[in-house]
Length: 148
Image (cartoon, rainbow, N blue to C red; front, side):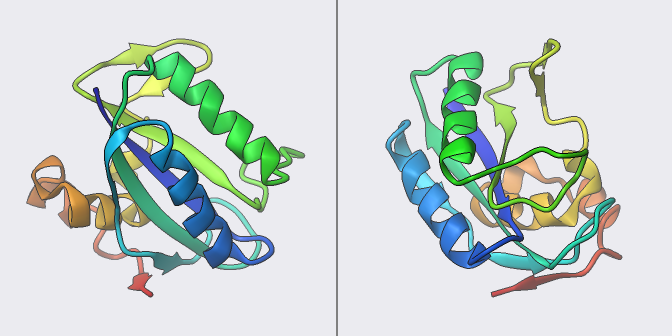
């Protein structure tokens, strides 16, 4: 199954964290791709600027198993969740899992806010342009994202 994962960080060496996480995700599948990195202001949050990317990979893991692996990576990177949208050492979001639509207490696919976030759509468009129609991207062009 082709999965797309949003990768972000804004604490510590965010660039290093995002690159290390992207490489770590490589072990979870094949045909791995990583977008360029982007620098973005926090959205609906406070704290330092974020570094963001999107990774695409083919995986044999189920969506719930992939989520568990991603959460283990976040925990290994020192991720804490003191409150919603708190600054973070690493944030991994399962954006898309093939054409699946999943609504469970632990997992929503497609990611429910991905179409509202330039920091997701710009890097996703870099590696999978067909998944980000122009009308969807037009809805976030006022959000500043800077390619690193």
